[in-house]
Amino acid sequence: MKNKIFLLLIFLSSCNVFKDSSELQKKLQPTWQDFFKNNYEDNKVIKVYIATNRSEKSTEFGCEDKNFGVEFSDQLKYGVCNVSVPKARNIGAINNGKEKNISSNFVITDSKKLDKEDFFKSLKNNYSPLVFIHGFNVKYNEAVIRASQLAYDLKYQGPIILFTWPSGSKDGFFDETLLNKTYENNSNSAKASIHELENFFNNLSKNNIRINLIVHSMGHQIAIPAIQKFANNNSKQLINDLFLNAPDYEIKGFRESVKDIKKITNKITLYCSNNDKAITASKIFNNNDRIGSCFNVDDVDVINVSAIDDQTLSLGHGYYSSRPILNDIFLALIGIETKHRLFIYKSELFSSEKYFLRK
Image (cartoon, rainbow, N blue to C red; front, side, top):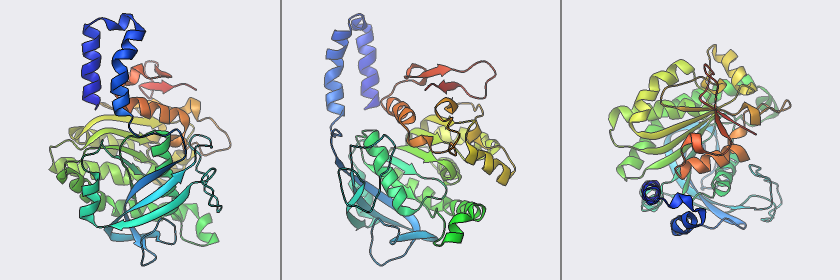
């Protein structure tokens, strides 16, 4: 779809139609009408495709924490969670109360287990799926709800896939309060999940499915090595747009991996913040600089979002689901170059990023 838009814009430019905005609109309108097939103007049930290596807590597939836990499994399970997403809420909010009110809350309406063959078969012949990999201390149900929120707020026109790994604290008050212990456990689970994600990428490639990929926080400790491993064994492009949000990943290792990642990725956009307290804590814990603190990297559009993430009472780590970031991702997905997107400006010479995102 992007290629069609680019070709259309080149053709229009050669015809000098940009001199008249009304004529440009008339030329582009059929393209956008053809692109926006899925309607998001009302409450909507989002089909979230699930691929998980979390351990099963029950014998039946479902979308609640009682179904999948925070322990590691060496086998991927597949399924679908249907989530009713309310229109009446703030952008990025995931109202998930006990009341099953689809007007105000996210509500799981149905779920179904799939075998691997049916899972990948159902993704074929669609607009590129959007894959979401969550970060640290995110339990299963929250990950499902977040994936549906991202798809809805982006008005995404293809399938949404959640790759959910064994993140989150164990049940119990003390486990939930011991963040350092949870971080260590989650980080070990992330590293153990790299092989499963690489296999998932291999199956996407075998089925000729190209994806867009959004990663958050500690999810990069799975995604970056898995992408690199896949790239070392494949020449076929897998990822159109790769969005790295608040990456909890060491800068040295990331810079070394970018060349391989670019082999199978069309474009890399990285959002970072100097106000991210979680990344600062990770730097202390790991005793090295993390890319989420903003560092320039060749072949990566590094965007500093500190201006929109200056809340003193928050960790400054959850901006990936906010209105400004979603707006920028949306424009990137339809092929607008970074320097032309809304609220983006070039950073000063010798800055630790290429671009800055305004409020």
